[in-house]
Length: 94
Image (cartoon, rainbow, N blue to C red; front, side, top):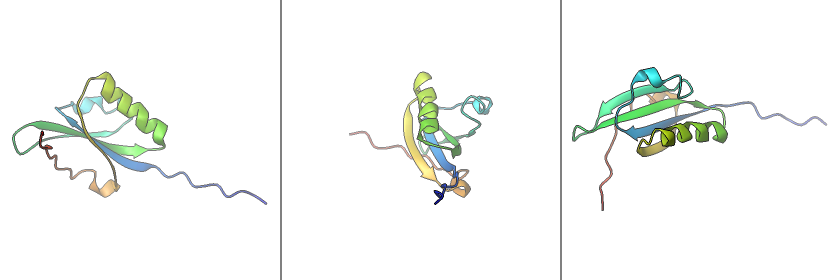
């Protein structure tokens, strides 16, 4: 019997960061699309959106966020069609 191979499916993630990153960093972030936006209070946010092959690749991208000392707001598994329509929200501080 032959084992059935699971087809490779890349999952699209959106990583939202506090602050603004220039789109020229896209290649360094594994080719992710970089989109900046202002929150309701004028605070800047950046969304990194793109396909991830596996958890190891996602971890590598998050390590780059850590290396730059950027504040992580959220990591979301999304449908590709929703990647361009993010609206950042600021969580209330306790």
